[in-house]
Image 1 (cartoon, rainbow, N blue to C red):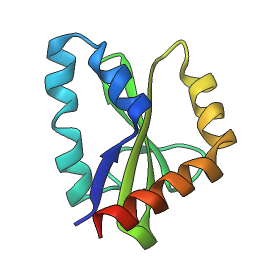
Image 2: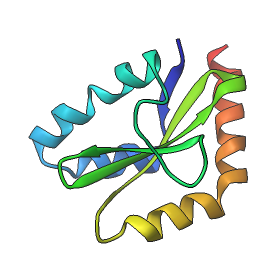
Image 3: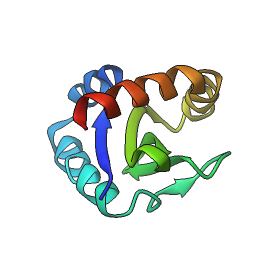
Image 4: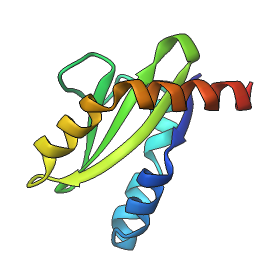
Length: 105
């Protein structure tokens, strides 16, 4: 099973969503722990999204660390800018994932 961790930014953004959306999002970590590849693949096999109504949850899969990092959320309007931001910061996200993996080991 994979460990599933949300970044501070992800958690902050999710907290702003309506309560019914938050209830749906609460199920995602369990699904990802069992099968991290269940969402839609984006530009890379390790970059994926899961739709929650008209919103999207973005996550990165680190197979070697057995870790899924929930990194961002957006609406359809901001989808491409969010994806571009994630891709532009892959190195930073990897460092965060490695630090988390060390802490939870």
